Image (cartoon, rainbow, N blue to C red):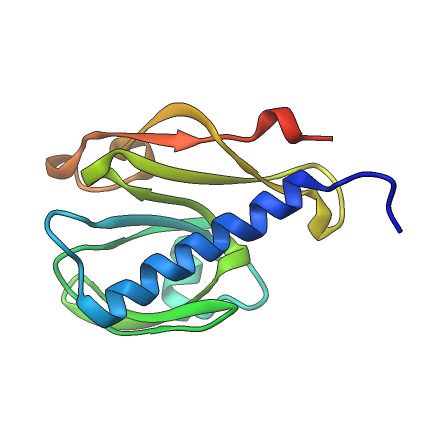
Length: 159
């Protein structure tokens, strides 16, 4: 038994669960109002699935947008599958929750950022909750939809 509570990993699990719940709701009801998501993920994650040309073009991380057109959204306990349009070419992706680096809904200025700590294990992954502004242009998204989004951080719980 550990002699301390691992708040960082508990928050990590809770925030990934929040993303899963939001995506489950989108499967059931669609995207409400002006909600849309910018999701940055690690394209080199061993469980991420994407076309070779996408992983070649984005060898470290990539930001996808769920807004006007997406198809075949399937949410599981470990990640989600979705078909998105890349230059008029639909491509299927599978994004594990553990591969997500940022999840932003700029319509309500909400965002989560997951940082990889220096180290070897999954215990080194913590979620940040420190409310710096992430601008959509920093996420390499189209300029016409740029608006500030707030990110929640947990620096105080880092080891």
